[in-house]
Image (cartoon, rainbow, N blue to C red; front, side, top):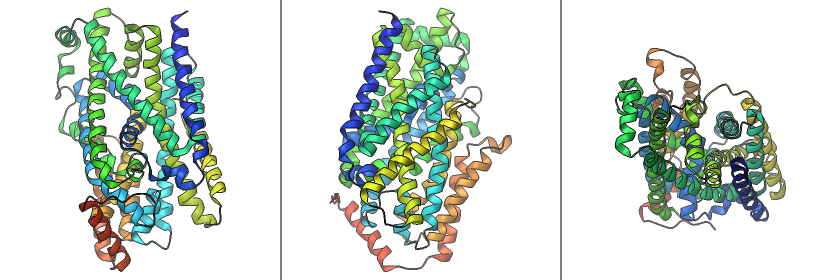
Length: 499
């Protein structure tokens, strides 16, 4: 049996398992609430690993190792910023969002929560939020498909487009069948696979290159600055930009929707411990993979044309072909877990947040689920069209979409959870300003514009939302009562549970 046959066998097993999960949950989705949020019955470990896996995507095994491989530890500041941001997200957002989304008329999407929280009868806020989700998630899903194409081209010599379509097809299939629960439980499996792979590759790799000392010496022969956190290119602007990735967490719909699906707000503490523990080990493994890869390439005299394939190359040369096949499947797991989560949120934006505004509340549960599945297919086709020609790095595509969500929704979510006086006009003004700033700033180069676009977008959103809210806020007894109920429930460790 050839090496490639072993690897293909491992991938077939993986694909079959993911499709099996999707099929299992097919009959569980009898209403839009089940299809989009799993009936708010997600177990804590599943929520924690699902949030992590849907967050990291192909960036964790392709983008981050590739960036560190190419530039050194200066690129690892991104991982530091993300870890801090993820911890704060679980701490500040998870418990309140879980309670408040249920208190505010059982909102099952971020746009519907903002509309209900702020009593926006015009529906403009909900439409604007839905459109922002559609635009940036199409870029985000496209980045996942690019990762899939790069993966199969690098691992099997397959044509880029064929690999992209294979990954997209399997992911769309199990998401189409099983909805949110299928996406979450496959994320749990995929997160476990990513975790094990990111432990195995650097540990075996460091032994293969002669230990940590020998690895460090080999890297210094290439460029001593690669081992410095403040090496070449590590100016203040670069470090701030890298750390600012952590700001994005507060506004990522595909991550914070896991908080909304927890069985109770009290489970956020356990979720934070599990999720951050997973994340610390995973990002450390990704950084170490890049460094070990540098040492291995230097010692063996090999060449690596694409730095983002360093994990793939190490997996194939250091392990038995069958084990290498499952390591390759871990890369697919990272890619597909994020695509599936994003498709569910994008589908919910189309069905719950846009079609209901245009078509009213006349659709039956069965028709809404069917419309949700059609939305998954539609967004997938649009993203595949964008990804057909690979014209950017995985990290570049992810960075733009991450900034878009972080700047548009991050301040809005935080203010809606912690500030009574946020108004609809303030939220809308800040949200649109954040999204537009990211689009403009991210396409302008030089000088201050080299600062990651999430920073100006996040700041402008916050300032405008506060100023406009101060000018337009009007007291509402219902809004105040819901805000106070949320604070009492969370502060008293109350267990707001799904009915």
